[in-house]
Image 1 (cartoon, rainbow, N blue to C red):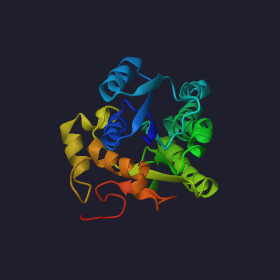
Image 2 (cartoon, helix red, strand yellow; image 1 turned 90 degrees about the horizontal axis):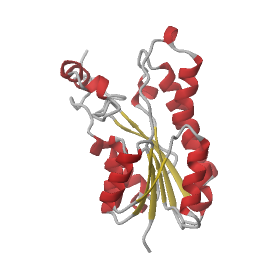
Image 3 (cartoon, rainbow, N blue to C red; image 1 turned 90 degrees about the vertical axis):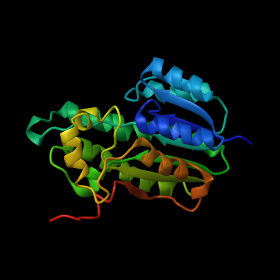
Length: 242
């Protein structure tokens, strides 16, 4: 029987690469994203269903669940994120609340909305996303690190609560060349300087992260749950200079 994967943030670099990875494994896809035109184009390319909407709005998740109906969902990937870099004295309540709503609360809402469908699967998988900045600690990352840190806690809590039939894991990437990160990667001098901070001295590509996301979403990782895994060129653990 064909398995179904739902991917939120599927028009982003990592989400789209994950969609291609799961399609190659034979999954039927249902894609979600905010940019309706790009979403429709990707869905057409992959032969997927799609639901356009804003992950900050609770109705988006209810709409998608209603569209799926009684279909089981075998993999849920929440590849939604933000890069909101400001020093603490410039952050306002709306920054913290906005990042938390999009990243952590959005992930929880996605799981809540699709939990009945995930339970209809014989063995389902959930893949969430954090950031290297939670483990490493970077200046001007207070808001996004708080939000992504909550996702790591959510991963472990849901991994315990939903066991054994639903596995939950999280990926923590370092800086990756995506449209969302263009403000950092578009300046080649800055990109080169950041790349050299990694033990593997380059920036990530969406496929670097999507390879692990595809693995964790699939039955190949059937004995892995509750984990936060780094795809970061060694940055969170290795120091090769100084």
